[in-house]
Length: 163
Image (tube, rainbow, N blue to C red; front, side, top):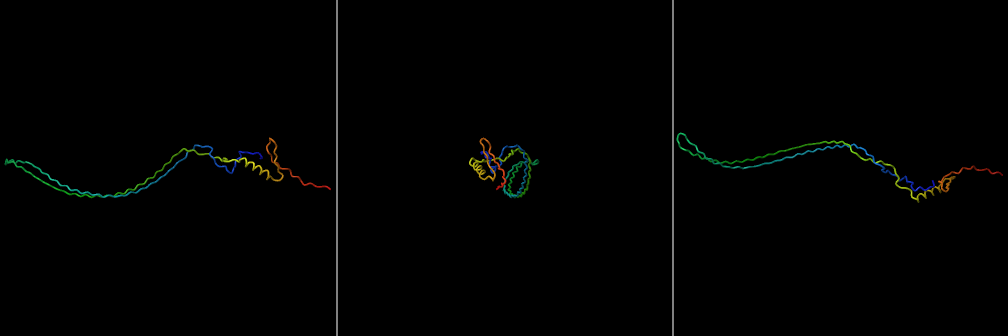
């Protein structure tokens, strides 16, 4: 009391402050699920026309007549084809994934720390307020090179007057 402390903290303004970090391990867990349905169809067709001709020549001999015969044949042909195909598909799928693991992390250690101190003007105001607003029978004593004291004076009983 009575001494000005320029490092006196304003406790109302204290707040948690990180003072250190500690290594720790955290357990991780994840889960996911997905579903999908796909359907589709297709239709296709084709047509074709083909034509062709062949010519073949051959010889044959008859044993009894000694005549040589020559046979020539000729043929031709054509064709037509038409093909149609169609199809339909439907697919349904789902999956579920779960994962678990550990990861290293730094956890902060917090401490309530002062963020602001009383300045000189505020310190003087506090001392003056204490002195002016002191209760009855109290006094402040300040001696050189000594700390300030607050004292209470003794209560004195009312005296009796004699005649």
